[in-house]
Image 1 (cartoon, one colour):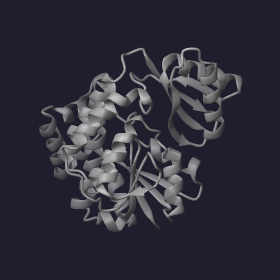
Image 2 (cartoon, one colour):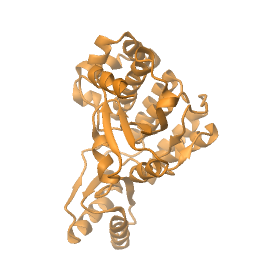
Image 3 (tube, rainbow, N blue to C red):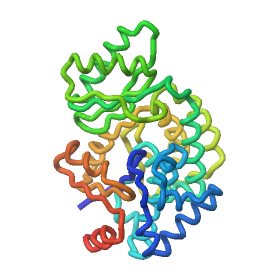
Length: 317
C-alpha cells in the first residue's frame, strides 16, 4: 500500500480541535505552545475553548488548523516512532493546508509556518473590502461545464467583474470566487443550466482569485524572510497538481496559490497516477477524506486526528 498524507484547509476548524491530543501527549502540547509563542497569542486556548466566531476568523483559523495537523504529525513521529519519509510517498494540502504539509515534511519551521499563516490570513482578509467579493459553491456540475458557464456569465457582465473557478474540489463540487455581482450572475446561469445546487458561501473574502493580488504581494515578501528546505517527501502543489521539491519553486508556488486555483481533484488524480492507493488526512475534520472516493474510486481515505485514530493508524503500518 502506498500512502500520501493530506492536510485540511479552512472550513475544518472546530472548537475543541487538538484538545484531546494535548491532554494525552506532551509532544502535542509542545506544538501548541510553540505556535502560541511564535504568534504572541494564546491560540491554543481559542482552539480548545472558542468562541467559534473568533476561531473562524481567517487570521486565527489558518494557523490553528496547521497547529492541529502538526500535533498529529509529531505524535505519530515521536510517540509512535513513525518514519515520515518511509510512510508517505507525497504530502499535499488544501489551500492553507500546503503550509501544514510543508511543515510536516520538514520544509518549513513550525514557528515560521505559524507566523506566515497569521500574515496570510490577515492579508487575505484585508485584500478586498467586505461586501465587494463573494464565493459560491456549485454542486452537481463538473469542471468543464462550470468553466463554460463562467465564461457565459462573464460575457453577459456589463461591468467586467471578475468570476473564476477558485476550487476544483471533486467531481460535482466546484467553488467560484470574484466580484459579488459577477459571482451572483454565474449562479443564475448555473441555475438556468439545471445545476443541482448553487449557493453563496458565508465567507468574508473572495479567496483564490485575482482580487487577492494584494495578499499575494504580502506573501511574496514574507516568504523571502524564511528558510524553505527541500521537503522529506515531495509536495503535490495546488497550483500545478504535480510534485515539487525545489525550495525556490515551492516559494513561488505558495505566492501563486493565493490568487490561483486550488486544483484539488487533479492533485488527487496525480497521486493516484503515481501509485498512491491511500490518502491519510492529518488534523481536524474529514472534509478531504470525504472527497477521495468521489475523485478516484481506486483510492481509500482515512482521517487521523485523535489518540484512538493514531493508535489504529500506527497498528496498520
